[in-house]
Image 1 (cartoon, rainbow, N blue to C red):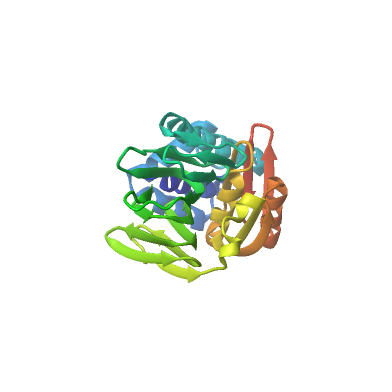
Image 2 (tube, helix red, strand yellow):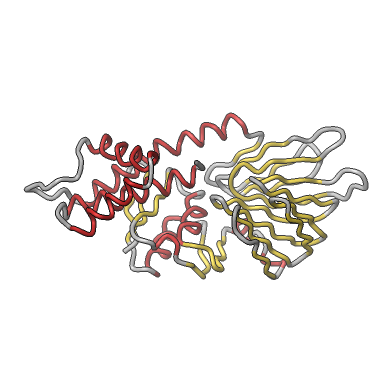
Length: 298
């Protein structure tokens, strides 16, 4: 199970758990709980994990527990799980960014601009120019070479070129490739795509690829501290803003995380950007001192 799947699993469990604490006899919530637990062993393990974190299981009680502390407890448990992913990246990555972007000179002589919260492995050797994007987003400026293609691997997708400028981004299980200039060949799960300047490919394992066009001058707006959301989900926008904030951002509540967003956000003020996102959907942002931020969808 991927990290995104684990996160979604805990989110689903937490949403039912919190509402059930406030309405322990609600028939619809009880059915939702039973259906969630019936999905499988991993769902039951996630539910038990939350029960251990809270030290109790949802049950009828005389005094209602405030929602806000529960949100922070949930987020704290999620943070403990996901910070393990950060430790893995620290061990594997040759280049990694924190809350600010950075420019990296690769061993091949090419340039990688890394967005905040990004990490890559540089596998360059005498006969190859290869990098693996472990997390986040990178914009590559690739020098022309007649005999050594420049290759970026991101999950199940591989993008390669001889001399060009292009962006590769990982948002959960979704990978985006956008080409500023030149040509980029993309191989994803046995399918081949040929992209040129102004082409963008969105690929998600098990789903159809989506091709679109954009203005090359707008590529990688995060280098100018902007986020241009055009059809991204609330969860994906929150994940990008998360890269600029200390700690973790968690989206919980209903199906709101899958809503599509269009907008222009200022990444130089990430908390304000998250609140602007919340305002569109009448959601709430809760910020805890321990570097945990919760976006609660209605």
